[in-house]
Length: 232
Figure 1 (cartoon, rainbow, N blue to C red):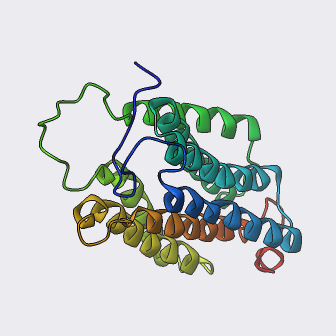
Figure 2: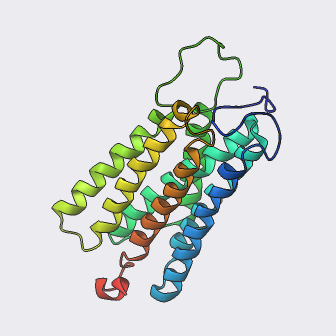
Figure 3: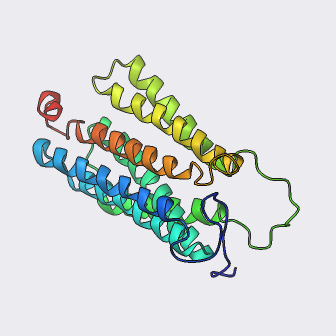
C-alpha cells in the first residue's frame, strides 16, 4: 500500500494541491457544528460518558474528512473513513445498551469504534493500482453505505412499532442520510453541468444526520433515570 498515492474521485478536484477542494473541505464544519448542538443539549439534559464520547466521535468525522479533501492521498482516505465507521460502531453499541437500561462501558465503545473504523475503512480504500479503463461505478462508492441504510431503516421500523417517543429523530436522520447518499452518487455525473459537484452536500447533510442521531441518544433515559427527565 502506497500511503501517498493520489486519490481523485470528486468533481471539485481538478488538480493536485492542498486547497484544490475548498468547498468540499470547508463543508466539513457541519460535523463540529452537529457536535456543538449535541453538547448544548447535553448541558441541558445531562448525559453519560458514552454520550460525551459519541459527541467527540461525531465531531472527529469532520476532521478526518477535511484531511482527505485537502491532502487527497491514501492515508488521508483512511483518516476519512475510520471516524465514520468508528462513530457507527460506537453509536450502535451505546444505543442498544442504553435502550435496554444498561450502563455503557466507554472502553468497549472505544474498542468497537477502533475495530469497525479500521476494519471497514481499510476495506473501502480506493485501490491505487485500479485499472484506468475500469467501468465507472454508477454510485461513486455510495453502495458501501448500504448496510448503514438498512440498519437505520430497521431501527426506525422497530421504534415506530414500539411507538417510541423520540422515533422522529431517527426517521429524520434516515431521510437526511438517503438525500446525502443521492448527492454523493451524483457528484461525478454532474461535473459538466456543475463544476463544483455535489459532494459538499453529502457533508452538510451527513453533519445534520449525525446531529439528529446524537439528539436521539441524548434523549434516552439513563439506567435508573425516568424517561420524563431525559425528555427535557
